[in-house]
Length: 206
Ligand code: NI
Image (cartoon, rainbow, N blue to C red; front, side, top):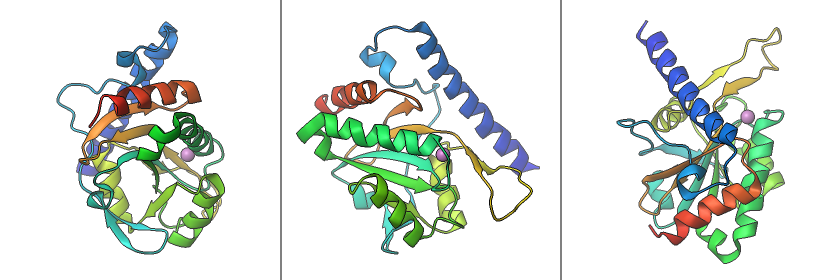
């Protein structure tokens, strides 16, 4: 029962965040600094420690990225469109930033660790961008990381259990050199919007 309540809470948070993103989009205003990221409701903590496994099979934590900016994305390699779109946007935005973009490590965390083994994830991330760090882990490790970032995910119902899809919230998280959460970007931003948002925050410093 507690699990259901908790899941409902995550869905609610995802819907609120998606709604805020939608309102910003609907207003159709030129992006200002305050509009670029999605606002986090007051009192909601975001981010924190995680323990995961990289594509070499090594254990990594949030401390492994200290001193560098991290652009964190949660998804899965079998995702037909949402993840590939956002990963391409991330890659292109970092290219657009030039030397500034080199201060950011793009990180893809799978929410489907059963199929996304380190080897599968390694092949996938290489396809998108050599800079992209792929992280997986045990079901529990992935669940804990997703929980810290308020990521909603669930296996979508399908007749064939070996060929399932995952429902998941799709946000891009900017994490500062100290490991602290900095900004949330929504799915479907243009490359220019994401690049502008990142530039503003990177230039503002840590
Ligand atoms: Ni996806």
